[in-house]
Image 1 (cartoon, helix red, strand yellow):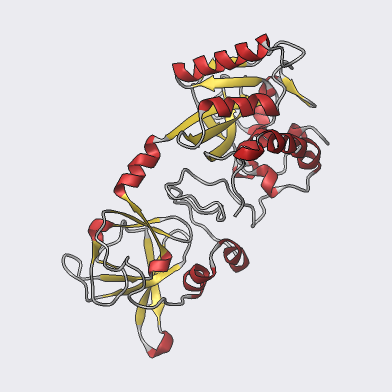
Image 2 (cartoon, rainbow, N blue to C red; image 1 turned 120 degrees about the vertical axis):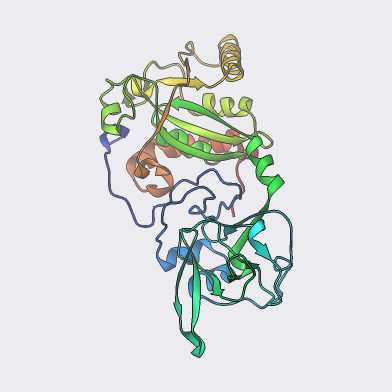
Length: 354
């Protein structure tokens, strides 16, 4: 019951919440929001109501219309990118925008042929073309044939349905991001901890090391691939740092037990840091030496340092596992105590609840 490999649950709940992709915009209240994911998103209305603000929900999911001349977006000429406010999908670039007299943000061209879809709208006794987000199907506005050249089109959008990011912010955010790959036993446990740490923008469970390319969970569980269960952590260097990432790592698992964490036994559960550059290797060597010298643990640390070669993402039902399966015995008896220890030690570094 307490062995992670014994749980090969492959069912995916319709309401399971996938881990957020690497975002330009952070919306922790909406786990479906991604500025990079292009996969179609189909959620029940009740789920949308939970993750969207009331005004966005009314417009995006029930085709309400905001008042004209609301805010400044309709006349702004700042360079940047416009995204769907419901799911984060890229819709327009500022070069495709023009100032119209209608009082709503207007564009003459969409970002690409799949970014926006259309359907007839015969409401209110009018014949119009409704514009919908190409990823999540949220209502954006309407398409008219009275726009400027070269298309002659006018995408008349609700500002509430759009998120805008200036060009400089996108470049700045990407330059601040760094990733590291860590293995500390079952990846469900490690993932659940780092998802709570301030400054961490993305945590993905998967596999690294070994001799088999893109191994399956079942193959890794045999212990014959040489791969380890790991998490790939992306963090914002302006909000946390490598030192803190490693301190959390050595706090929430036992780095002195060889090829095991509790009841999870095998080389796939080894304590390992897959370093991507000399800085990560030196930082890992330094903290291990300090912990050993201070005799923080009763036994010597056996964490291995291995050069990063490849990361293979685990299937979707392994992602955000604790959040989606809190009632499972493994989550309650194994993961929950690790989370509680982390929250106690790093109580001032937890992400704010929204």
